[in-house]
Image 1 (cartoon, rainbow, N blue to C red):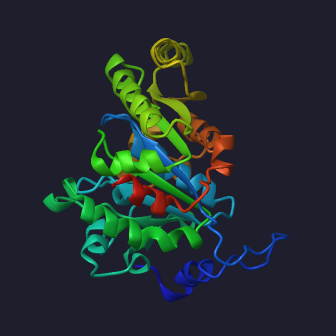
Image 2 (image 1 turned 45 degrees about the horizontal axis):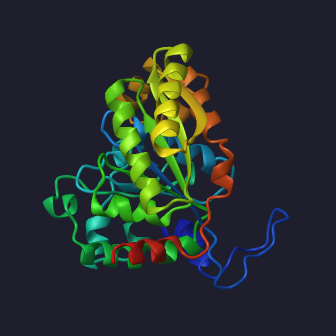
Image 3 (image 1 turned 90 degrees about the vertical axis):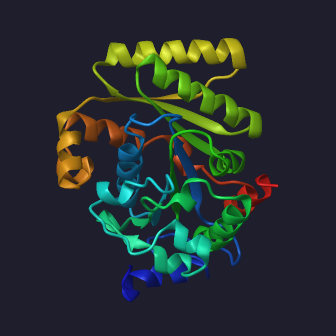
Length: 293
């Protein structure tokens, strides 16, 4: 759990941002958080590694960042950050704690809401479960600058609701045809439920730049041909032993090996301009709740 002194910035967020560093205060009641969904369509793409390092990169800029591990029941973000949360998404659904109590502080001040591990009820939440969860998380939008939602593999009910609600989607794929095919399915579904969503794509764990760019070209061509649309090309992240070592030590590669090729590439992903514009016209979690109906 967060200690009370650290949690104070979360509580203050609901009343609007304090003056400081030349910034103006947020008008009362205005939603401050930007929300980006990170999805891949299949497991094994390194999506959670990218999401956790992205959260750290943005927090190092001084942003208040919340990482939500939405791989409910099979969560691993806490392991990647070296954390041991007492509470998780399941406790919010049950109503046994509020979202502030469920948060745990990680590296660089990133706050994590864990998805929980091995709890069958989290694997297939009902619409009522998700409505309770979204209501519980709505106050977080007034307390953080950026919310990064790390989705599990596939297109469950909750994931589709998030896709319908978000303004910004970061799509992660491997260079293999299976990864590209599943990423295409996610992209297609996102456009179906949210035609105005801004989507960027990253090819992760690629053996070389030519391989990554060839994969992107195949993906782009298929999207243009069959969907008359294509995501933005953010870039690629190389396969790097530094990442494997960081997972073993439970220290994000951004911190464990900041000069590694993978860490440098992740830093470039964190520069994607859409992350600074990832706001919706109304509260994200209100939109997600409406999408369930």
